[in-house]
Length: 459
Image (cartoon, rainbow, N blue to C red):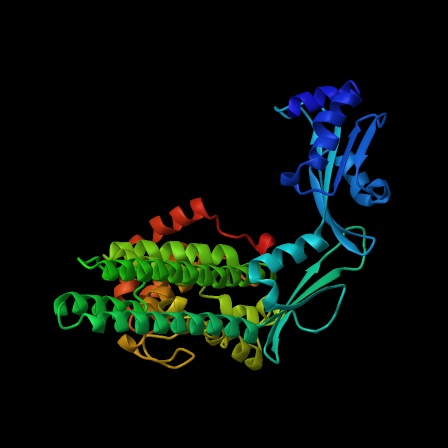
């Protein structure tokens, strides 16, 4: 298809391009574009869909044509954020040059629609563009979490700021309402079931005892438990009805947990936009933690718990202003104290639901030291959750072996030497020794899979 486009642009086959490129791309929902623009190298043919005539007045257009390399950027047009991407039309083997294909998307409605669908429209108080409603990137104000993201525009235009206000109170209330509904349904079901059961209790004592036990398990949240069928028609009908009800409750609970997890994932993505170091760091820390846990014989559930905890261990930094997160110089005492709050903030974000009951404890205590001199609670030795002790070691190892905006990465050898010296002080001996044993291989594998961030990327 790309080689065909190359040929048709060279021969100025307008009919083919209209049917197979310009109009086709614009009309297809799966492409999700608002502008399509094609031009040949001699500027003798131009085809476009969408209001994109303003493009030729942008430096983006001139730079794109002169460099003959793919180019993209954000622009302001008619009060909206527009994302443009230009591609040189070459052959598949990247030889020759026939012209340009430019695609564009209006970011404003795209963000509004997609953020609402992920977090739930009833959880978002407002989404505003071109606003300076708050001065800090992210902060808690009267039960709301404000998320700011700045689009830096091309051609020296003023940046556009998107502000999303999300109510923690609404999220908590939604979860509470679902729980109340589930408890009420279970209660009514239990009453109906017990009424029928006691009618036959004298004759079928053993059968009813088994059924009561099953309903009790269901009432305690064990929705996979099923009532067994018996020899009585009424009991069979009750079993079928209760089993159908518990399956519906289980599916509803899964939907609630999925929605909540998607909201947490959105917060993680927002943190990655604010702190460019977070994404690669969290992925590598998770990789190190999982490999060490497997080496030590942890079961599948324990390995999955440490994997999720490691991926989200810095989520609390979403409550730390970006100018502190990205500061290149030495932090002041007050700034350091703000940074030290991120394990508690992460715990509070996840504490809304029981879904992350094991994960949130690991996140809260992953900066505790084995000798009791860590934060936020100064826990000591085995009082620190085992997952947090493992996370502490691998988190420190990746921090030392990764370039930061204020210093270069240490070698694996130097990092291992520091970890060796801190055994029994900062680090649990079990996990420190296991990491040291495999440090070089783990580093090589992580670097191959995830790639360590460079100073330039962080800046």
